[in-house]
Length: 136
Image (cartoon, rainbow, N blue to C red; front, side):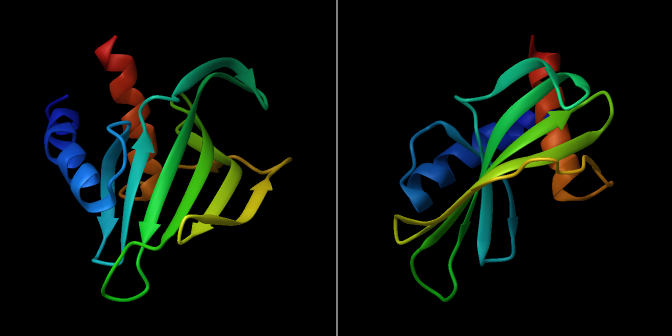
């Protein structure tokens, strides 16, 4: 819980300042100075059953990238299904934007669930969903 509060405290101001995004986007992690990843806190839902998995979370994750020093020009929004009990997740959709315009939009069907390996982005998504469970 301390870790989640720490992210919440430090993450939200940087989202608003750097990306000019609404308060709904919670900072999760960055990869150097070229990309930052956030999760949409307003659209999190829990589904009883999806693709053979019970009680799964549906979350949207946004990665903002800048190919050079300057503005954050690219956004990749990913819809993920997260199964905390199995420690797995699945990609269901992606929307890519460049300079605010949608350049690609895809939905995925029959995608394999993947294990969230330790110290990876997948583990970060699992931990975010666990914090939701623990906060109830």
